[in-house]
Length: 498
Image (cartoon, rainbow, N blue to C red):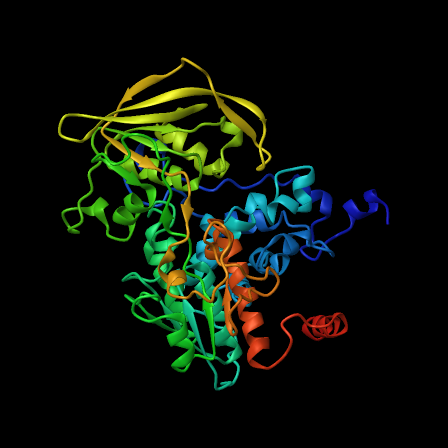
């Protein structure tokens, strides 16, 4: 069939491919920038039913959909979008929940522009289909109905699995195992479940009620979540294996702050982004004195970094009343944060100091931050990341008066669990070494995935690791090889797609 014939061919929705390609991408309603900079309400307001159906009509329902391969958890994207186009959000959310436990979360914070939407066929000539926004619409529709669809749960297999951490990797693994018929217990160190979704991502990007609702959904599948449980202190991984757990999945994230090791980082008023956001999000300091967790913000705040966490910290400080300066050593093009988050930060009034790097933090006579000294940078040759390496410009130092500094230059693995489990092989960064295809570690019956293995990454990649871990644990507990032989793998695929 020629390209012209393909474009004129009617699809199941009655529109031709050509007609679908002409529909512009539907913008998502948002709070006005000046208003939202003063509150912690959600920035994006979501699609209406009419907007969702209009956007769903842009999907070509490809016979060989590349978007599914672009999704780390393998969501059947054309199928759930087709249900929305047909005015059946109940069918859409049911289809989503076949493969994901976090549709409302992923629809808000996952970088679809780098994954499923990046390979969308529509995006080759026009803007790609807004897959994430449609996922959010289906999940929010279900919440508004006060219902919760659940996939079929297999009969009990009589085996128990322990999961360390209730972030995206841990909860995904737990939910998948529960659907397979395993007894699953999640052990969470903090007093609320959700991991980085709860302590790290601000309310205006991801309301905590949504996170807790998604966690409650996983509990409804039969998963037990135990909070205030520090594995490595309250109980070790070896204790878990000795006391009734047939396998363990470690997904405790990468929450250890990283600092620059420049003079003045020990002054009062210097925070890690982790501490700052944990106080604001998990402990609700933005609602002080209603919640008894104050946080010092001051009049002028410097946030050092260019990733999503830096944007979250900067936009949180802005909402707490500060004049915010974001300092990043490379140019805007090299910023690792999502383009949407950078755009929102600029709209709200964050002041960007690009090609700039701190050299020291200066304090007053009482040990409080007073200024931050920076040096201008220029871009040299690309480094290992593929981005051009920033090089200091001699003699270009200058100072910015500041009250608070928030360091957001990365995180590492917390050593509490690994120090208590010397049998686990670690890499040079202190992350657990796990097989990429199976999640298997150096310990028999112990698997790992998410940020504790890869270092800080995205929510959806952590979820993908959780699915890999669940699949491998299932095979391990059935006595099957973790990596099936090619012939067996093909048979499994045929059985799954039949």
